[in-house]
Image 1 (cartoon, one colour):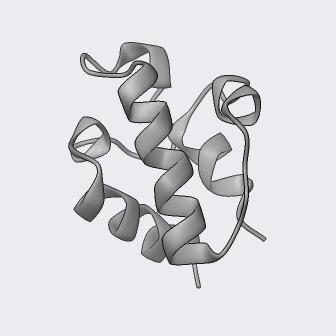
Image 2 (cartoon, rainbow, N blue to C red):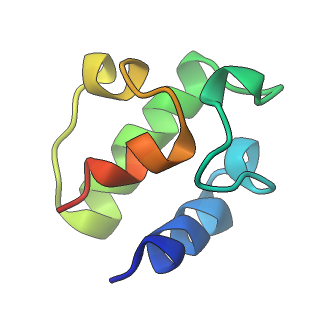
Length: 71
């Protein structure tokens, strides 16, 4: 799966990143917060069978950083 495919899948499920690109800073997203972080964790578990922690997600600076957590 390419980065663009990962991005589109994430965008289809999480409204706060719907208009984001790979280089969009997470802090610049108006609705980015604890609920979005939880939704990312659930998305990774359900769609990618990958367990990530809140700390891992919070350490990401951009949407691309989030997607880099997916092998």
